[in-house]
Image (cartoon, rainbow, N blue to C red; front, side, top):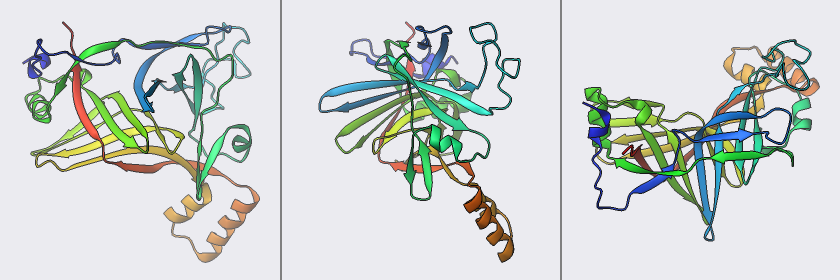
Length: 288
């Protein structure tokens, strides 16, 4: 059974539309010596006071040099920056692109001095940064879509006729005076006798004026029960994480506290979870 047959479409109705996450793309850096193109893995629309603003999340990659561009290969002599184990992640908005810092190792205080961040109690989150000449060109027109019921998705998963690459998520929620709508592929789906649980790849979202990135996960039960979460990384005291996960004597804990005071170090944890009362829709793009 072809996946398309699972989602009938009434042509007499005005079709719904969504940003093109299949062929959409971003071209960054066209004003400089090196430009690059990335797929779009999520789109965030925000409407406040009748004004709509849209942000497009590119795909993460490794920190890299560009050996044949101006500036050469850098001190490491190759492409991958082995001494910078981090993600390079950007989003585009209003003709510019912004970087979201994402580290994968324990780090000290130098990054806090170099990049904008916001404290959240004992934790903090990095915020996007950009330069005036970070030019971005987005190609992401809207395309007609067909909504899919949870029953149809379940039938397709059970029968094996649903290609997961055809399935996308639209999640809408309200925070204060701002209406948010998030579009993303369904990268992964748990399913059982009476539930579905789709999970996205990286998405972009905002909460209390903070720019955050992470994952969308929703659990849907046949009786209508629903749980939706957005999760983002925070950065926290690395010594406190070690102490919590280890069975240390009091003297060892005191030693870690002393290290934390003398040489602060931080690590990333995906544990900023927002429980949202929103609307989740499955959809596929109309290919006809």
